[in-house]
Amino acid sequence: MSAPAILLSLLFGTAAVMTVALAVAWLHFGRQKHVLTWTASYGVGILQWLANAGGFFLQSRLLFIVTGVGLIASGSLLAIGIRQRSGRPLHIAAFVVPAAIVSLAIALAIGPMGSQIMQGMIIPTYVGTLLLVSALSLWPRDRSLTPPEIAFFACLLAFALCQLALAVSATFIRGPAEGKELYRAILGLFMPTIYVGTAVAAVLVVAGDLAQQLRNQMRHDPLTQVLNRRGLDEAATRAIAQARRHGRALALVVCDLDGFKGLNDSYGHIAGDQALKGFAGLLTLAVRRGDIVGRMGGDEFGLLLQDTDSAAAADVMERVRAEVGHLCLPRVPGGQLRASFGVAELVATDMTLEDMVARADEALYAAKKQGKDRVNIARSAA
Image (cartoon, rainbow, N blue to C red):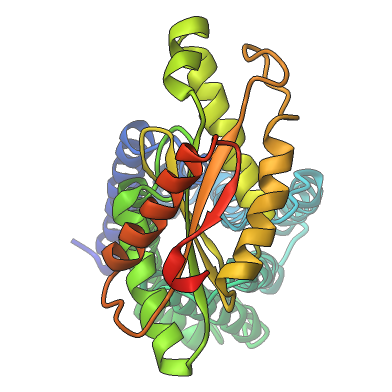
């Protein structure tokens, strides 16, 4: 088997495996838009490499044009998927219009009036620029790159540089056989490895996203979208350690809805779920970024307020308490919701979250005994 046949077989096989792997990931793990777009990108790659093989062995200009259009479409879909995953604004026309112009240009370059220099420069220049912009789009705005993202970023950057190197080497082409040595060397030695590496890195990114999604599901309450008890315990361990390390205040609030069982019995569980979601949303809006909100079970919630003593935490919860009765929920009659709050501050003898919870629970129980719908501070910090 000739070297071109081996090379094309490798690229075709990579595109086929990637299409199947990404299609399975899309079908079974959340059906995310960017995964579907990447599936389409490698699906186009299958057709593109088939056309490339046909064009090479049959010396068909039409199949070479199809190959060029396929390269442009595949690269554009990969870039669109990266944009979708990053959550940045996406304007399809910004990809479709340039792709159409470049496709027309490559059709003219491969035609009788074109030249091999144009053929060698147009697609690598466009695809290289597209991949370079895509690599920059991959970079998140509010966090550092994960290891799979770093690998994908590096592969995209290498892919872009390799494409641009192809474009530069095309300027040395002087005839049907003259000046093609550098172009063929880059195409044969580097492109297959980078293409396969980019494909593997894309799969790693999808797998990493899935792992992060599963971790979030393990730590978050599906109804209210705040942390569950496990997530709250883990966050509290870090918050307590940080408060001790820097000598800062930390307050825990344990709260629940007054008469929640009666609400469920009178208006149904859908109304109860709406009350829980509304209450959780109110708690989340009341605290600052960096503070922690979690559902401890049933209608009981826990909040960790960093750099906050018990008096300041009670002031915040007093505002929440006043707003609970004004929540507008479709299945809950107005004015039906009330809540009670128990506040405890981190003290020297607290070793775990449970130590703080015990005192906050006592304060909450005292608030219930005093008539509910109130904020009470644990005696040790009062």
